[in-house]
Length: 446
View 1: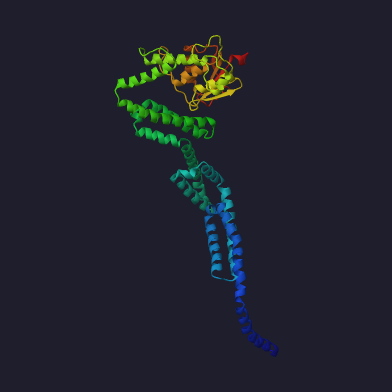
View 2 (view 1 turned 30 degrees about the vertical axis):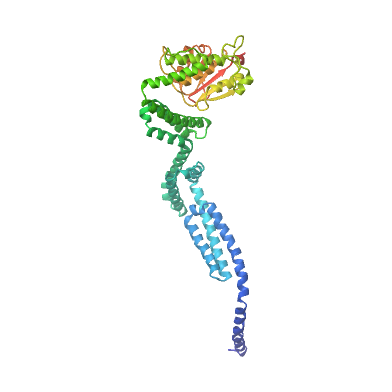
């Protein structure tokens, strides 16, 4: 070994202890900036991990995300263990590389099972998470599908993707149904518990038909106004069923005469309010018909349009001498709307015509001799009589009901054959609705 090299080695050996002692004496000053910078060094990794969770990388690429999660914990351990800054930097870098890889995998999975992701998103927007176990099972199956896709298992993906998509569509339908008909379902169940089959079988049939019609509409067009009306009607009929079941059960515990006397008292009270003579010697049907006729006379009296808008009565019986019925669509709109409850019909004005649209139809009962009808048909009759010589167009999907209603109105001489017709196409009225009635005032045809 050359002499010069030997001397340099001896000098290095002598200086090393001094250098080591000097470094050790300054260790606190070196560690202080490292500790203060540790959180800053970790921040990019933590932000990327949080963003990955928001983008559901943990679901779409679970294996790669779990590796990134372990590396994040290793980086945090480097800080708590007081490891060197280079070591911390190395672990943070590993974690960021891994989360980038996981995000890349997740993007590929999104493209591969896009239809399933869309079905899941739509279901969640509809409130699927509130359906409990039904959604939980669909979500478990989805996570398995995503794991298979991220690992390149094309066979498993091909076998399961369609079934998982259908699961979410089913969950969505259930969520929409629960949000619109959940209340009706609970009330119907309560009515059945309280004996609806025994005490109100006819009303139960009507309520179940309304419920079924709303359910079918939710399947076809869950967000249309017609469907909303049908759902509201189903809730109304369910509440009506429960109320009638309780009333009928109460009547069942009374004597038949007590029930008849209760009906008579109510009819007599209404007749008295309308200044009718004592009719208790007549049948209930005859009494009710007299009440309806007197009420019709009250409606056809001349009433200022300002009072109609406010809903105030300004005429008494027998003061209509010299008056003429209002026959303008705009003037009678408020009066027509007052005939129907919001749950039973939608009344709207289209130009000078008034349109009455029904979500369900209560079929008329009886024959031509008795001329008995449902309360819905009697309301239609009253509404049309508010107009002078109108033209009436019936439209809708229930052809049988439209024909029967036309015959009913002709028998009651509400209209002549020249004044009423059934639309031959869907341009007049809503063809998706069971029944739509368009009343065109005579003034609009001049």
